View 1 (cartoon, rainbow, N blue to C red):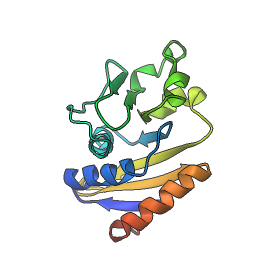
View 2: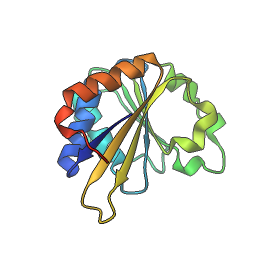
View 3: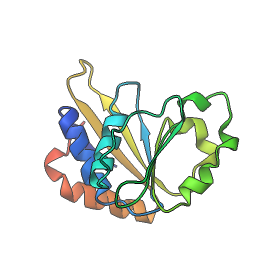
View 4: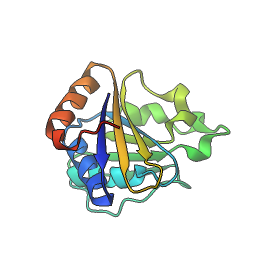
Length: 161
């Protein structure tokens, strides 16, 4: 696992952009972190890499936002409201096996529906909330490759966190 230091919102978007440039159709990225950790901000960077011009906002109440105006679709999910169930009716497997990139916030609430392979990005803040850290955890060989390429691309941001 590689950890990267993100100084501000702009660097979080840059990190997302660098990651987004490495993603392929059918890739699944899980974003884990507390409220305000930067999950939606990171998703803005992924969308930027895909050429999506629409405003990216958290799909907290709608659960899924679809963006089709880039080089490939982006499916942005927020599973927070599924803590008490309801995920079985949403057809997650159609998104995970679709032709776009799927980004999932609060994935712990849909654990039973996740594919076997994915990339997790854990977002954390330091004690005084002045810095953020993104730890990349690949699950599967394809995502190991993405993680390695991301580490190479952002080697100046590596952290000893």
